[in-house]
Image (cartoon, rainbow, N blue to C red; front, side, top):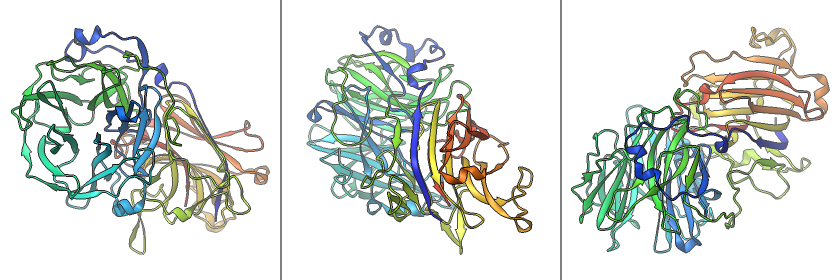
Length: 575
């Protein structure tokens, strides 16, 4: 049975980064150096700069692109992947393109079952008129994980189609960084702080050489190389992504191969041992702007010191830095509202992608395409999504998939794992929001279901759907006595929390759909009622303010656990 979405509306408001500041200042130490507090700040900036799940960020300033900065981030199993955002003022960020945007570029998504498979940390760089993104695709099996290196390039960063198919290589290490020396030699630094030369056309690497132990020798990840004032600088993340995440830096005089000397002020960025609202600060990259001022991007959780509820996962923050000649860089601590280097406000950017602060009001007009910021879990079956089909203008028609996202990590049919789900999503970007979908759906067979989801992964999600259940169904019966009664459409609220840190999830809730609602689409509503809980409701689209709250669930269900590297999405599924 087809599902038709007649009208789609998201209202994002309140408690976004603009209203949140750090709950306390760091203890005196490297991250609160007096030098960092006397910068000539004259403009207010807000964090997260790119809200919603954008983890492991990497940024590059490109003067040839009208003085624009471009950032990319990890995308794991979300497609299209490797989103690139652009900004001239580091405040207004626009989706420019997706480097991985078509199945032919890398079809292996459909072979991945683990919820943490997919595109891991990427680096974006610009060299002699061409943009490059280097990353790895990580795929776990029963005994090991396999990393495949991918190098994409383009000369038109505002076009999905202009991104190349990747140069593919066997990747021994994760988190690749790309660096060109003055003589044009290209190098790749990787986790564990290994260094190799690379031919970007063939993907042939030299033997790997270990160049640094960092400060601890443990979890040396996300390396980035820079050359400044006769020094090679190596910045790395240490401590693992989580509450012990830190950023450290070392440098070598004259040789990229070392030896590297550690900065005595390490770590130069962290939230360890603070009560800050922003925790897990790490995996940073440095870049400068058109005025020569330095900045750092990093990932973080909006979790507070409790580190329990952070459904948006690892987000991209940007904070000012100073980097005087011959000196070590000093990075300002990350807060929600910051005084930072002045850049003229500008939203004058090419391309058709949305700005990250735009709310959604989408009616799927005839001849339109899927919004650029919508995504899928693995490569989608494109035939399952039809915009304005005959007889149903201004709708998105969904064709149900064989598997259900509420069934667990893997569904099987005839012994084969199901990896394609009819599931289309957008990122949660605000702490408080309301999200509405008007749904035309009339299930005919028991087990069919369509609805909305708060989705972190296939084992951590919060759902409200329309399905056929016994007329005698109650929250206690779970609809299992269907053989002895009539099947009627119900609203069903169900939570999957098997991979989460929440041991007890709310039980299923059911409500027969009122007969009066059969004359019009049903409005399904996801609402973040506070910083810790979601409420899912329903109403007739004819009387949308007469709504019924069906179920409430804590945000900890979709925070961390099996989805510790990713972040929450909301929207529609059909199965």
